[in-house]
Image (cartoon, rainbow, N blue to C red; front, top):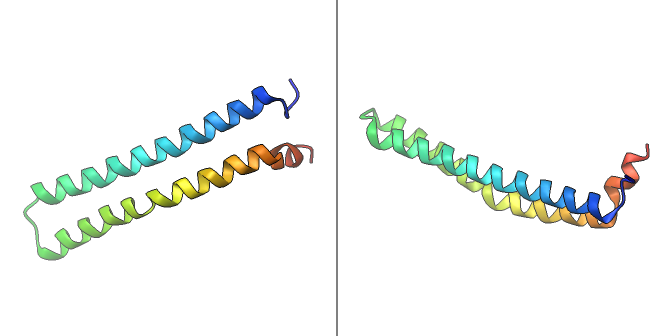
Length: 87
């Protein structure tokens, strides 16, 4: 199958969406785990702060995933992947 067919583009769009969604789910899972540990672990104040900062750092990355995903969809529609695949 030629790399620039509509079927191939549809598959790449689906893979891009699956990658973005799976990344968001993993980030949410990690942030949730950090917050759960923070709530259950009686520790020094610095540890609570560290766990909170790490959880927030996980959550901060989520909006950027959607920006990158939209960029990837434009690349797929524009054929940049097809052109790069010829080299």
